[in-house]
Amino acid sequence: MNLEHLKLFVRIAALNNISAAGHELQLSPAVSSNYINKLEETLGTRLIHRTTRKVSLTEEGRTFLPHAENVLMSVELAMASVGVGKVTPQGRLRITAPASFGRMHLVPALANFLKQYPDIDIDLRLSDSIVDLVEGGFDIAIRDAALKDSSLIAKKLATDKRIVCASPDYIAKNGAPTTPDELQQHSCITLVGLDSWNFQTQNTTQTIKVVSRFTTDNGEATRDASVNGLGITVASTWSVYQHLKDKSLVPVLSDYPLLSETDIWAVFPSSRLLAPKVRVFIDYFAAYFGEIPYWDK
Image (tube, rainbow, N blue to C red; front, side):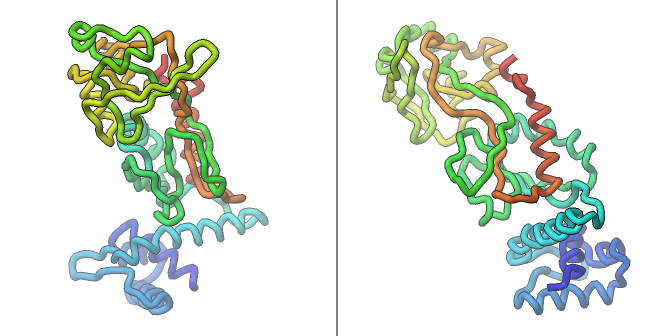
């Protein structure tokens, strides 16, 4: 497979214009079209939709793109390992992250990140489902649970903790539980599949299966439902820190800390040569969140 063909394809994907991509690589429009035709012939599939107004990637082209980028980066890293060429953070960085955390804490920081690294483009997919990094063609996954898949590598970006909380209105009407057992007499709000809450009580662990009046698959929805007085919920501090400050939520059962493994991790496929775009993203956000993240200050 011709590397020049791959370079052109990657630039076309970024610019949605064959002529402009060819111009960057000092190729004429005719040569550019020929390169793409040859690449499609080699793969036996169409990668690009061509119209008189624009070009766009086919479904096969979108699937092939991250693999083409990885091939080019691997070649660049291999050359740099023997002192040939210069490796700079560049290319499209594909990230998957939990929807709420991504909106609240990644997106606001990306403007400065992209200013520092103008040759990087971001493709951020927000979903609360755990996706397969390799199959999905992602460079990094942001996760809020400990890594269990040994074929991946995890780098801790920030500490996090979870608390039990409720609105002042709910407490005024229903009182606050004083022990974990009393939760079973209260209305609780849960994430799907997380209706058993584990507490540290003196030298033992106590598990309470709560009565859920409202269950959802979105953390922001559980938080907002609790703010509106529907019940008691478990929430990450990164999700509720602003509500704790303005007193629209207050902690309950503070003497019984939750047991959880909820730090924020950057997860990426195992690789001896880590792409510069991945490395700078991890370093940037580890520094941005800091040893004590702003949501816990």
